[in-house]
Length: 345
Image 1 (cartoon, rainbow, N blue to C red):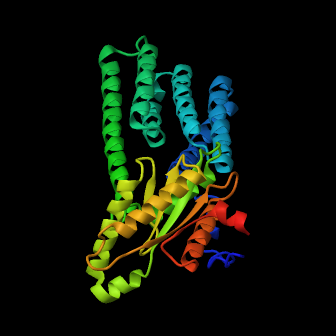
Image 2 (tube, rainbow, N blue to C red; image 1 turned 45 degrees about the vertical axis):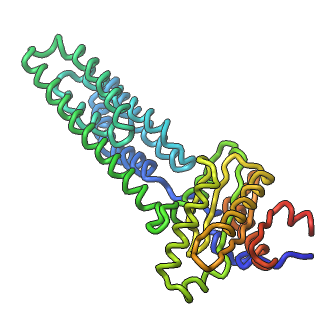
């Protein structure tokens, strides 16, 4: 028996997931930092080249070339973590080389260089690199400066690093808290649609082989009747109790999202299609027997699809949605698995 065409099989609202993911803020910050460095350093390199200060010119122009290559690399690959570390190390080495070649008057380059590290790396890593740079700087300046002047430089650089570390650390904490709140459904506490879409995009963007996983789409049957007969507060209570049931019967590694009004998505990480089918049947049975609403039995239909090998996240979602549609068309309160349905055709 042919399966009815999914409600979103052609002009799919999930098609946008097949596009390349949006650039992360880390990528953007790294490329902006590199782009700002080029016009800041290039004039000095050209001037020193014109003056015949070859070593200093080579250092400046090498920095400009490195920043240009990083922009191109991150733009095309999206890999920013190793590039951020490399840029910070190159910045620090270039700053130390410039001070070594041009002398104490250029020590002020240490301040923007060290602050930039906190924009590109985790606070502890940036602080560690800057601490090593400061030790090298002290060893370089010790023969050239009076002790009091050197102490002034060390104290001011240390304070700049301390303030930058505190600011970066607190900003990171606030961003993580906001991120959690922005991706949590206010009613059920599950992940919201934004979190679900972000998770699917991360699967599509991941270049390494992904571990086995299955997607379950669960939809409450005739939920509109609950709101019509008992009111929206009762409907909200049903959704909260449903999430409690889902959490009780899933593993810690499984991820639960509220995908729509009464529709939920569960990513069963590390689960084969057979294991995910058993999980779906357990959830279906648990929902049918759970007292979600007194005097009103509630059931759920579930569609299950394995993550496609080398496929797109949009295809994964569409396949699970197609199975959910098949479960609804088949009479509701049932589970449909992508592999099993394909074998029947």
